[in-house]
Image 1 (cartoon, rainbow, N blue to C red):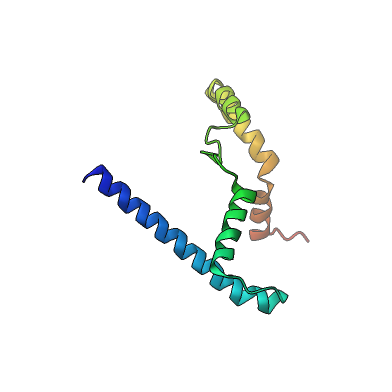
Image 2 (cartoon, rainbow, N blue to C red):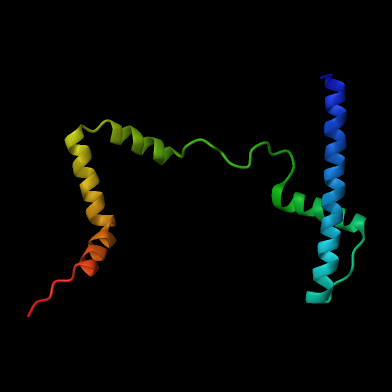
Amino acid sequence: MNKGVFFLRCAVVGLLAILAVGFVTMLLWNWLIPTLFNGPVITYWQALGLLLLSKILFWGFGKKHHHDHKAPYWKKRFQDKFSSLDPADREAFKQKMKEKWCRWEQQSDASENPTVKD
């Protein structure tokens, strides 16, 4: 496919998406806000302005990535330390963590098999 045609199609689809989102925003605003909060009825251009304002306030401009997908420093450090342990130490660590943080398993086992003492 020609790059020019592809670009033109993407531009048309983007423009239609902006028009549709603006129209849906206007309909939702005019359906909910006047009834719920006694607010004003807005026009299509005001709805587009609200969308632009929300983009500026909540997302900003020029940001390529909203989240850094790299693992946090502590996670990499923990993985390095955990992988360097020998198997016996690793199992001991896992057992300590289970004892400290997985008490609910012990409690659920006790509630399923209650022992009656006379």
